[in-house]
Image (tube, rainbow, N blue to C red; front, side, top):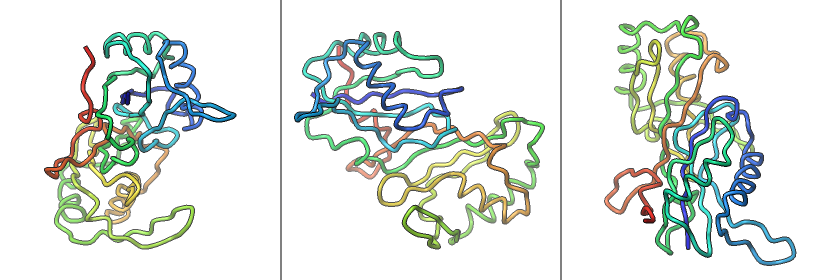
Length: 238
């Protein structure tokens, strides 16, 4: 039986690396008496896979991982049991059963949404009137957003425009940004790359350490071509 779990992370736990977070949930699963399956072989481990892990320092309202279980309690019972073991800053919000043939969460990821805003509103140099025109000129109305993207394997120039599905100005104690970007294994776009491009075009000084990134949710593409939250692939267990 496949289960997809959604959780949030805020505060000091945003500084946990992916491996530390995975170990944390392995312990939490045991403490919550979730009847999880283990791999076979000389070194059995819990069958668990995360969807599009975020970087250190990024907060999130929507992170996901999949597990396989022999049997299960109801969704609400499992959420309560897991949250009873959680540290401050981490909260489980969904526990859903997936159809047997559902791909792993990471394989389904197609997009993610983010909000970016200044940690200290006093550092915010953005002027709403100017910003609206700049966003329209440099992000919305243009057909080409050329940036240099660095990965572990290469440095290449790419056009970000086809991978920006939504971009809006929001109010987070002053002007901030909402973005929906391509995510997953094909083309994973980091929101700070888009923001840095905008700042360079507008002549503003860009310091990522002043910016808080908060991922809102992670999405897969339905057969109808719609972006749906990863949790929508499963059903609550009564």
